[in-house]
Image (tube, rainbow, N blue to C red; front, side, top):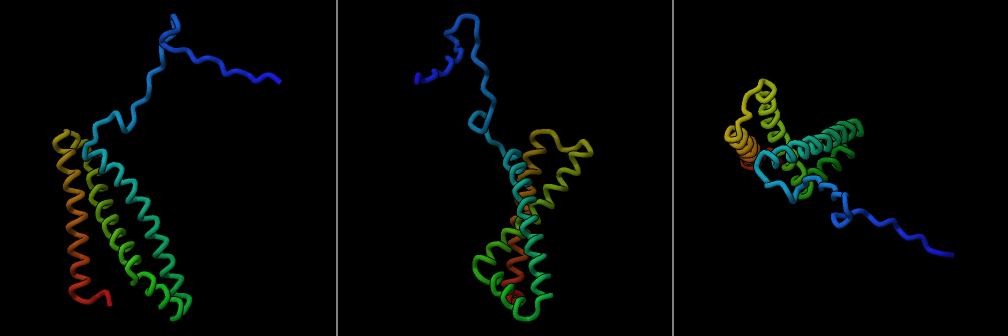
Length: 145
């Protein structure tokens, strides 16, 4: 049985045929802070869905009685659970700050590159600072016990 040969693809060496342009992708674009915050906004939105599931699990553990609630708090009180909660805290505040930024964009403000860069850094800074303040207060006051 004879094997079928793949048809030759046209190239620049074929007379009258031009190569198709490649689409731009991450390796072509120069990274800047507004690209990063756009990606982070989507990622934190997804993380908030996980947070909603954790909230639902909390409600179910309450309904399940003292034993299930103790198990739930033990999981969230563990080091991995605390890391997840810390990440959710950052996600809430970044998504909040970036959402406010989007509200200004909806009003037609803040599109100048310098302003967009400043507000991007402000959203990230806000999320980190407020998260550290809240977690510092929790740890300092013993509210985590």
